[in-house]
Image (cartoon, rainbow, N blue to C red):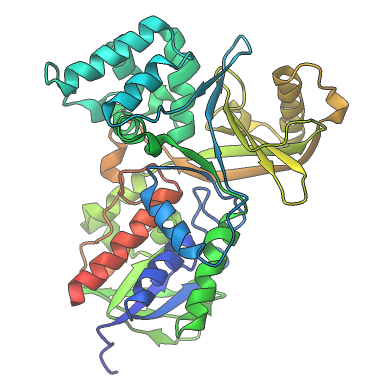
Length: 438
């Protein structure tokens, strides 16, 4: 059997992670084959049927790829929206970044945000200022503490943690404050809110993940010589001391490449790895300790005059957030969602009842019979559990074998397991491949 070309790459998984990696490598002239199995889904809200998410300005990789894919497409349906909190007394508290240079923007944004009491705003400002002036330093053990413990230590009141910080953590990471690593939360707060005003800008993307990302990348790849091979059975990896030697298909076809990239969920990856790798290498063994959180999403409609995209965080409510989407037809779709709470244990009838009750309580005067539930979605892998110590479990893209790489939202990117994490991971994989052969 002849040796594979140094520019050949075999990617297992043709979801968002695999396609994005292939898209970058294709532009660098690599010969790429993607294997696609119907059971291989990326998860973490990045599958083709998922609605395109609300993107932050600091999601640099997402915004970069969107600009590249939208060159010949219209994105007029995308909307910039505020981050809104519905307080327990029914008031809506929007957070909007002030258009000022540098540190002035977050200072003014903080002091004009009425979701926090004046005392909580002042304590937070004083804490951040002392760190910037090096009068204080961040604790060295943040990865071993919860975000709730850290916020308590900074003087944030119970009311502030329940009304603002917990729903914010739920939206940013899918994790509640009480189980979220303080290191992860502090990093995200700094990235989103303490730099430029544009970093905290929210853009509600129209369409789905499939429409905005997967379809245009597939079209580009299929115009070239990239092969997407559909599978009916899972392949077998042959791994020797130096790395992957081949991938064997169900019909005994053997595929070889210079690099092998696993663009799978961690659950599907573990099904393909030989048991000896899990016992010999900590890199692979730690993947078995990753845990996902479940989400329920209720999609519904009801007569209303509000016709604009919206994100409303719901502290103290059964559901964590309400998202409003306006379709091209003019129909308004509302999505109530909750991650990792008791709602995920309810049956569909109970969820429908809970969603109708929620809408009627959120919007007084709404008649229950006018709230029509169109669908109930359950996502078993909506996000990663990011408890203290979980960061060490997420693998880097480069495995212990030089010719084997991993990509996906769940790998080590610094982001929660979301769209941005998927795209960052894909680019890093592509850069490892191109950097190793140039």
